[in-house]
Length: 317
Image (tube, rainbow, N blue to C red; front, side, top):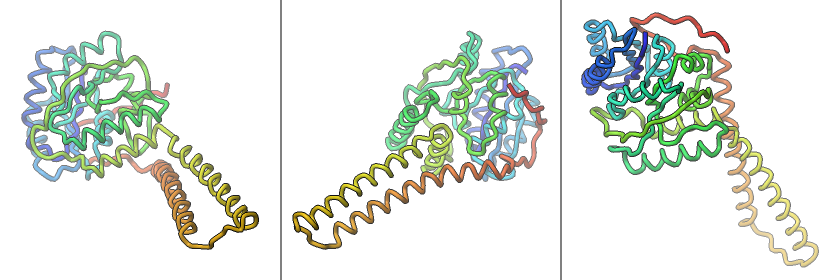
């Protein structure tokens, strides 16, 4: 199999048929040696996405589907596709039509210039609110500054990766997936092409602000320990300030005798110290929660039905 296209699906009944037609219109003229497959991963959709996928699979042997037992999340859906894709090259693309399938030939061509990863970098984002654009811009630049891994800014999961990179991803067992960061961590030769991201084709996005926040926390905690260091430094800084305030209080009491007992300064100090402590405990708790999820060793996902076969485990490098 030359090329696999992984498409995570969550309530995308309005876009599946058009995406399928556009993918065929792009991939069939490429005349790929060994052919291609379309791997749709139904992530617990509550609409008619699954019947549409079953219909496509019955009509076209190149259509593979994986139906989860429930909603496990976008990154896990992509991971399941990677676990069962057979292509020497793998494209990851969302089903909302914001990422144009027409870029796949260019990605494929660029990869054969000697790159293991070619990602699509957004020049502009149509259809997104100003708040979403701002939060995305701030997050990616913050992540780039606080991590030791060079994670490209203004990119999503839309990219093509080689089988070598797929095997590397399958060796990473963590529960809280941040695939674009993992791909950057793997290394190898990587490059990008730029494009203008279109508005959503149909339906509503499944990425709420709550999911975006959780996704951001997964990215930060997976690739940076800076929040832990910040909590430690803040603790030392606050302790230093408290020590100086204590010296000033003793000086006022025993030297200048200019001392007025009162609750405002006491309450401010208690609330400030309490806030710093709670923030520090919360940061530590985020890391511990992710460690706990990995220690449990629960399966990352459960499959209700599929027409794909599991692949052997990749060799450790």
